Each structure stands twice: as structure tokens, then as C-alpha cells.
Amino acid sequence: VQLVESGGGSVQAGESLRLSCTVSGLTFGDFLIGWVRQAPGKAFEGVSCISSRDGQAVYADSVKGRFTMHSDRTKSTVYLQMDDLKPDDTATYYCAADYLVSFGGEMKADWATQFGAWGQGTQVSVSS
Image (tube, rainbow, N blue to C red):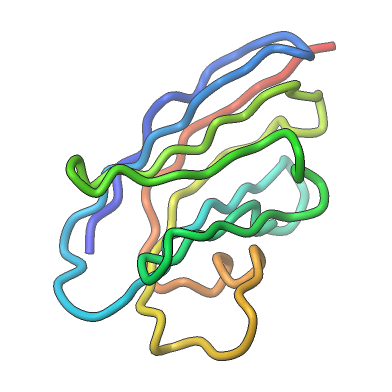
């Protein structure tokens, strides 16, 4: 499985960015794709997760209402639309993927930190 992120950058608080992740190699069954971020000196945080089974996405409380994840299967790409960015959103953002069969129960954004395949990451910096 390969994941390639793009779209990071430097913005001011209140502005928006859209991250993209192109996915290849998921060849069977239902799968999950998520976004994980790591701020300097902090642990990985699962930001969002989307299921290929129904296209529904879940979000961490810290980004709920500001971030939206959606997929375009024709382009094998998922997007993370980030609005009303805050300085606390400054982090390296990673796209990650795994197969749904490896997880059970209600989908949670934090599942993404356990996914087996990760991209190289893209930096997002938000200044006040």
C-alpha cells in the first residue's frame, strides 16, 4: 500500500487548507483511511477516519466542525478540508490506511494511529 500526501503549507489563523492523499495498493475488501497528526514534542493524534464501506467519516473532538474528510474513488484520493485553522493545528499530517477487517466496534478517529500503512507526511503551520 502506498500513500502520498500533498497540500500542506503555512497559513494564518482562521484560514483554510486542503490536504490530499492518493492511495494505491488496497486490493481487496473494505478499508479505512485516516489522517494522523503529530505536533512538535507531542504524541500522534488521530484526526479523522473514513470507511470505504459507507463513506462515513469520524473526527477527533479537537477538529470536529472545522475539518471535513471525503473521498473521490475515481481518483483514488482522499481529502482533508481544514477550515478555521488554529495555531494548535500546527503539525505534520500523515495519511494512513488499513483494512476494515482488522478493526472492530464503532469507528473512531484514533484508529488511524494504529493503521499499518502511512504516507511520508506533509507539514501544516498555522500562525496567530
